[in-house]
Structures are given as structure tokens and as C-alpha cells.
Length: 353
Length: 83
Image 1 (spheres, rainbow over the protein chains, first blue to last red):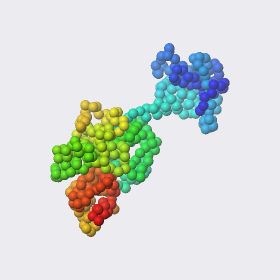
Image 2 (cartoon, each protein chain N blue to C red):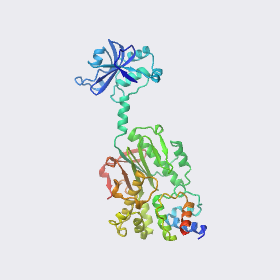
Image 3 (cartoon, rainbow over the protein chains, first blue to last red):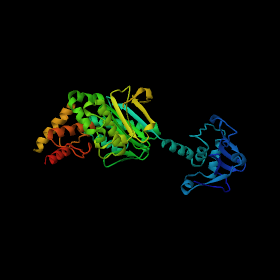
Image 4 (tube, chains in turn yellow, brown):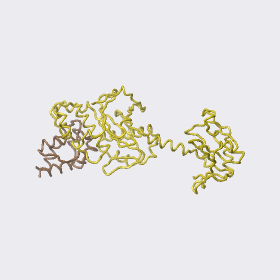
């Protein structure tokens, strides 16, 4: 749709710019322009609930501003109703309320009269801007005992999970994908089936619309969604503790193996704890997921080069989570239990330094 | 060292890391995926790498934790290193 300052005809969409916003109406004649509300002038402040579909003359509609006519492209012409149908639809709604600046405004009104579809480019732009905001949201969930595995979107991911030979892995991968679905709905309002997912040769999944990272362990799954590179890793310290209880001599070797040369100057493997190991390990894995994703060589990652955070949620104290990413300052954490998401306030989290 | 012997020693290493998977490991085959079929996550793979280095006297140089997809690929690497 283009706009031109030319003569208006019966059934046209008229537009006028008032301040920084556009006001839209259906032109019937110089004496009759039908719009959802009067032009948004600052001198006349009214509540959304008081706004009605009204008929005014062109002078009132334009409030002394330049009026433009909508020029439909060929695809829009095919979808548009006839001028008689458009005007009839507009007149039938005179006096109607239910105005909402974002979801049911004067642009929605004219689109509904002309195309039969309530749509607003102002709403689309606002939604697109909102969905591109700096965001770094972490979702974590304990694996439920009983988990019925159903089909997922996209089909390739569903097939991949179905083919997992290990039932515990199958459960973890299913649960983490379902948690991603909840996260996306919460943060962006997207329906999962509208998204465009891809799988790299290395097996890493990505989406066109946003960035994400997944992690699963024997007892829990975790997801981070962002509008910039992001990575997450979760480990169960109780599970790892069982192993070190049996093999305490192995801990210094493991730590030594994952430290870079520079890190070895400040961290002494022999005096490091299990928590130190998990902190360093999960941080490095989150960095790998955020910025590489191809070859995970922990001692090749210099943690001081990246922005990372390690923490636990007090209600899930055994889980150690590390995240990394460009928008990490926006960190928000949610837990999922029995189908509902709960935002965790800062005082219910503990950063592990 | 024969390939069969490498596999048996590898199974011992995997069992020492997680005895919950005893049945699975005892009956595993070379084409099984370490992550998908045996359920080893990246930390478990790090344990495995270190135990293999000690047990076989070899060193994993410039190798990513996620480089090995199947048990057979690990055996191939050990064989290659043992020369």
C-alpha cells in the first residue's frame, strides 16, 4: 500500500499525520469520513473506553493536516471489498467501542472495513520492536517423573528425539524442547509453529526469529532465549558429588584439564572444590554454545574474554547454572513447575563467584 | 593391543563413571552414540577422556569433547594413538 496526496473517492482509505502518529478513516464524501475515534489531538485527552467509531467531515478528520489517499497494490486490490461494501461495513460500525491503541485502533478499523481482516502496521511495528528488545531470559525445570512424549514441532526435531536410543536422553530432549516452546511464548508471544527452525551440520538448532541455547542433565533442563548470542549449561551438583565421593583424587585432574594456561596462574587445581569445577566447566560450556558450537576444547577458552554468570535458584539448590551472552545484563530467571512459570526475584537466587 | 581388548577396557572405564548404566554399557556396541544411546553428557565425556589417557597412556591433543559421536570412533582414536 502506498500513499498519495490526491483526490479521495467513495470507499477510499484516508490517512492524516498528526504529530508522530497516523489517523485513518474511510472516506465517503467531504461531509462523511468514518474513523475509529477523533484525530488524536493533545488538547482532547480521552480514555480508550470512551473512543467510538464516528462520522465527521473531512475538516474535522484532518484537523487541518494534509490528507493522503491509500493506493492499493495489485494483490491488495484483489483482496479488497467493493467501495459500496467498504462504506457499508464502516457505517455498520458507527458508535462501536472497544478501542485499544495497540490491538484495535483506527488502522485496524479501516483494514477490517476494506479487507475484512483486523491488522495494523503500527501494531506489527510495535510488536517487531518489542520482540527485538534486549532480552536474556533463562527458564529452568526439574525433570518430571512421568513424561509422556508426544509429537513436536518441527517434525525433524520430533524424529530426532524419537530416534534417541536412550530413554533418559529422550525424556531430557523432549522436556527441554517443550520448555523452549513455553519460553518463546512467554517472551515473544510467538506460536511455535510460526517459527523457522534450522539444524546445523554439527546438530545445533537455531531459529530465524530469535537466539536460544538448551541444556539438559539427568535431573533438569534449562533454556535461555535472547536477541543476541547466548549459551547455557546446567549441572546437578548432587549427581556430580556422588562421583567425586567415590573418586576424590580425580577432581584436581579434571580441573587442571579444563583450565587455560593463564587460568592456571591463578587457580590451583589441588585446592579447588567441586563447586569450583562445576562453575568453571559450566561457564566454559555456556561460552562454547554461545560463540562457537563446533569444537568444545575447554582449556582453549579464556573465561576472562567473555561475559558469564554462574548462579543457582534457592528453591533448586542442587542445580548449578551458567550463562553467557551479549545481553546478559538483562538476565531474568523463571522456573517451571506443574505447568506454570514463575519469575524468580534476585533475592531468591545466589550468584556463584 | 587388539580392538576387542580396547573395547573391554573402555567399557570398564565407562562403568566406573556411572554404574547406573551397567546393563547398557555391558551390552553396548561400537555403533552406539555416546550421547544419544548411552546418555553421556559433556562432563561424563570429560571423565572418560581423562580415564582413557591414564589407562592407555595416551593424550587427547586438540580434540574437542564433542568430537566423538560413537563408541567406535573413540576406539579408532585410541588405536591410532597406540599406533
